[in-house]
Length: 169
Image 1: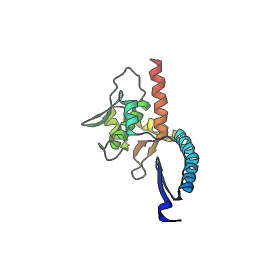
Image 2: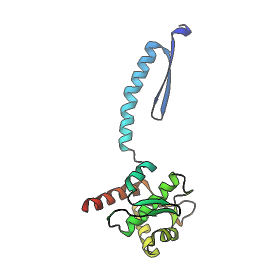
Image 3: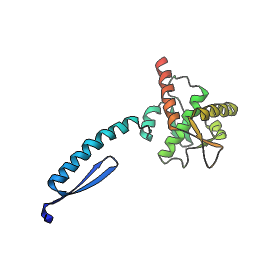
Image 4: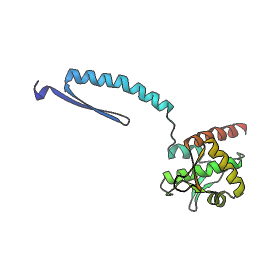
């Protein structure tokens, strides 16, 4: 086979990039096989993947969270009644958004920081954090165990909790 008959094709689908080389017929067959096998499985993987981007979080919580010059804050624009647990989770989501937007270096917060930003009773914050850690909604920081951050499961839980409260209005 001469060099002129050789075909090179690079296919990129999402994060997957593959290269096929050879005769036009073999490359065409390989590309079609790859696409028929990979694209449906990628669509399936997207359906079961759970990850929240800063944009998704901003869209979901912009009526409850603001990034102020003093830092992220829970500032409700709505009549939604929020429990202490909701406020703690929202404050941690606000910190995550601020970190993802480059406004904070770390999204983990201490109870004292949450008290300063939310004005909730520190004992109430500690109790709610403890409940949320047990439920997997909040995780302790590995380097600083006195700091906490919201988990993906916690954001998922918060989404359903806030959605229920908005529907009840």
